[in-house]
Length: 95
Image 1: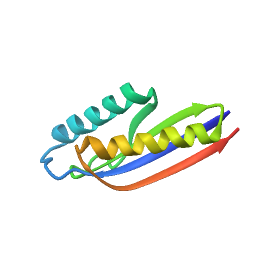
Image 2: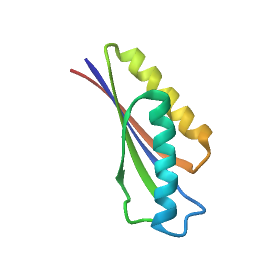
Image 3: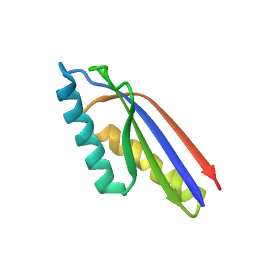
């Protein structure tokens, strides 16, 4: 079993409140969940309007397959253009 984890740090330019931030984060999580069937949650920077950290987790049988899906997930997050991706971390765990 292989577990893939990705954490994306976003800069939210147009948000002026936590309510606006929540709208952007929920939209991004929803689009990525629908496309890739991954687990997702906001994992950091909860009280900062201009920044969000979102974590995604995915399981599979083969490391290269999980890695390819996580790469596609990052590309989709970039293509959605709801926020600027300022950092991303990826980890593949073989169990």
